Image (tube, rainbow over all chains, first blue to last red; front, side, top):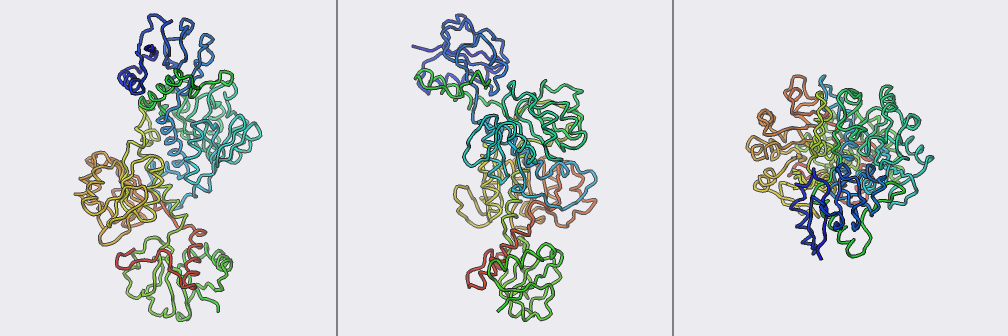
Length: 310
Length: 310
């Protein structure tokens, strides 16, 4: 019997229109992909972007899983009508893109590139930067993305100190947890990367007190979620120079509004939410694999824990 | 019997004054380190910077090796009075620093960081860059430094195409050689890294013809030696935009003279010969190991082949 897959993310349908049926067929899954659920009771799986118009999942009585195209599911995880298993997107392209952004900007700040990129005085000061092995990078968030970034930084000899809310054991990487762990990691780090999901517990994780724990002159990279940082507290710490630079990819409001202080601050670099993007080819493989698992009665990949919120 | 080691690099003596005797003693080598060779016939080893005043090695009749503090020995390799074994410096710190510079600037250009670092219009254009696996990096020069850089770039999924003057087989890395190999590698690459020694054969390696082989919009990173590139040909290719950017760490004359076109060119980033520097701790270990080898009759590390010039 053929499955009905409802593709409820109209803005990206063009990128998946040919790809999804091809990969489903290659996986031996008989299915039709529809963009209009005339009869919701016939839908087996929903492929979903949290920005999509669909908000009431009640009529989808046969739906076995809602498969998000996004890694961040905070917009949808609290939807009481969504009672089906919910899976986040964790695809290779997304992880690779994130690793490249985090490693690239870590090296940029480590090497002090900006003073060579912008050097109107033609200043020649041949002082070598320290080696990466003399720098500590704090990775706040040791999920799939944080762990991949930590491993790539460690491979370049950075001293990586991971931190997660709950205790974790990760091969070959130091990983602290809890409030005491956070203070110790922040006091130690030259570069702090925030790569946590947005939950009630992580909102304003970097507030004035915790920014105060950081080493004078430390740098912040936020490719995670805008609300992880208390914007006013960060701007105050940048004004005094306590934080020497912040490179931010995510914001409470996107696009970052013209007139926002981050645009004008000389110690802030804005990147336009490009650190990690879902690439169709990798994402479609993950979707198809989860549908295969659903049909085979195997556990879903990247199943969201509703209590934790990610 | 105690060895006499002549430290003929006065400008960096302060960094080695305590370190060298300590490491020699730890290695069980009885030696005194002097900065003045009152009687050249008593000197067993010379530690040397090619910029040092010493140019006539004839009086050092007992000297078993000249140990350069620099990786590049082109200033000294043609000195006819230097008949002793000559060793280049290849230390971990130098390799690590080079890898950090090359990977950092490769990621900078790959991710298009400059347009976010300098963005006076506050433009928000959330187009993701391609993944590193969609980029080709040409590594011209597959010695110790080039190979380490190539491996680090490959670990980040860049497609690395190595090239060396003579055929080489390097585990897991594609490596071409000769003129035909050079053309193929240059035509393919998005980023070209020049990391060859300066010899008669490598001077102006990137001349107008070979720059013309490069992909329109490709980027050049030169952390090797200034003369590897024909400066006028590069400036012409930058003017037309055929080469979209050059990030240069080394120059024919250093410091790069005020008024040089590279300082003013909008498509050039100058870094002040900081890609790789000899760090005393790592370098001193290599010096002591070579002295130990010399005394034990074992082959020297990083012995220069005078015919090849490196």
